[in-house]
Image (cartoon, rainbow, N blue to C red; front, top):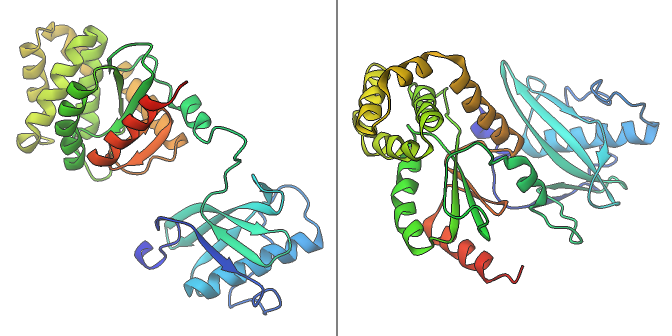
Length: 302
């Protein structure tokens, strides 16, 4: 169903001229300003929201069977635009996102606005929360690579293989691992993440042995054997097996995994692997791009 929307998953920035729609009648199913807006809106703002909804319905061909909610109007990085949350629902499926609408009602922008007087990645660095997570490399590294990963994800395994060479080439880079198991499509990813966390809690160095063993054996792991495999990996890593088993059954390790997932949600991570290099996001972890980003950051003077 969402494939036909293509509203929030398209890369790049799209700007739509709304002048022709500004006076157009509302499309079928278009309502007035959404009730979600808690603050009072002026008649002009209500009209702006109504016209914006009419435009997106017309542009994407969304009929009355699709519920579209825009608002409340918020401040954006540009004084000429409102930041407008948008929710699109069909049946029990929902997509949410944000668009920008000019205050004169003539332009709708789908993408991002940046304040060029500030560091665009500072907010990401504040949200990433690396403390208490497995890491390699100098604590005071100039470049920090934070990876949100899923042990069952094939693309995460590809990045794991690529990082071996990158870490060898750039030992001055700090690498931090954060769990982001995609439990709806990967049935054993959460258990594997808990297993990694239990290794880390017993021995931070042993985490990387478990980490490597899971990725190296990804093809033979399953929801049925993951527990026994993890215990075997723990034994091979020199961990106390009884302590490890107790950890696998306790809620503490899962809380840490879930905390990492919450950080990822705050950073708008929606696929794995997603890498943040000094706060700069890279979805998919393309090796060539990652190396270029590392070189760029290392070349900066501060």
